[in-house]
Image (tube, rainbow, N blue to C red; front, side):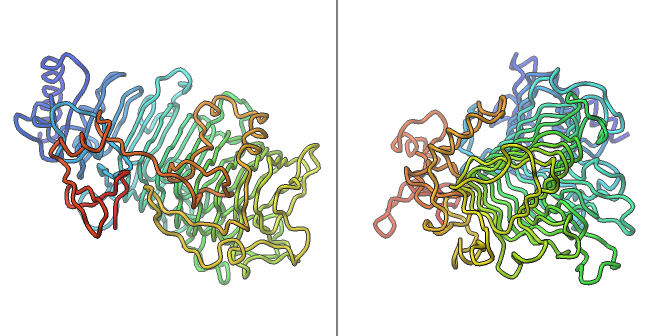
Length: 545
């Protein structure tokens, strides 16, 4: 009866909002404000009605959420996000009227947690907590994602998913036959451990026959049971990895994202010394015939797996582009005895096509053995292609390719002898991963170890078959969104990058920012500081710790 009551109330709320505003724009806060009719921030609807209203929304509907925690639809205990809507979270409690501009570099988030009873673990054990696509999570829709409008999601944290059954259906967000853009979202602490490893293998972001793009997102502390990519997995439509039909393939694009501590975990102890690490694709994986993945200006660090692509496993006939990324400390546990199962940064499967430009892919010296069959970058077979646009800083490499044009260039810092192997120690010195002004953490290389001519890289990449992604790819920015200096470095972070200017609301200058009354300008130790909601920012909007 309670579920029925809330469903009817949510439907009434949706109808009321349409009647009062004559536009498909709704405002929500966790507990509701004022009249609670959703027509403005002062009258934001209560979060308990968001799930049902969202599930019933028509394409073009826009949802704006104040920061805080939101529970899913009470009828399903999950989130169903339809095609072609806009969902923006993380707005501060000081928002007024119907303003919808926000500088996401300030870090606001609205939280969708699967830990519904606050016992420290997720409660969505038999389904993905968030479903985006056509049909229902239990249907294998035949809809093709290119027939659908793009769904935009901003400033949402997806966390605490726990799925204990099924393979490849996702433990948090499952995207099927859809087009979705994620901006400034976070995927945290999502899990799929099982007791016997017969199930699991669910990523925090599961992509089936879809086009998904992620900008300025963070993937941390996610676990997949057994293997196949804890942060994300890319698979064909219907998850049919045997399909060679290009129309079944997915596209996954990641720009300025951080991936940290994403682990393939196994409950089995039959692998001596495994420390319960799972099999392959610790951070991410593209299945056989899964499609295409892009990494651009990303940090992939501290992932773990037993073998075969701890940073990413690129499956048979898949395609991957690696442009200005930093792969740092992604060790394989299995070493030497299984030469086909290594590649701590990248393991590229038979027949796959892989493109490298301006990356840093190195491991600690203890993990880099030039004389063994281990490798940071592993090009598996004669039919596997590895094309370079130059300026890659690489640790140990095993390249079995005989494809014409495959191979690394003179501008690549590419080892040809044990004495030339690049390591974390030689490339980063004593530098560690930390925040340097953006929304995510970074690590600075030593300039002398990783110089890069950005114009040359851009020119070479222009000849690659990167399709429509050329329209969104921005190599002039580093991982933080800072403009790269004329003399830049390889990897995702330029220590000499120039910070963006302050952007907030429709304001054009600092005086206007202060004039809203939501900010206070003070002088501390001779520095101008902007105060808001108990936090301090400098003149360009970076939070001061």
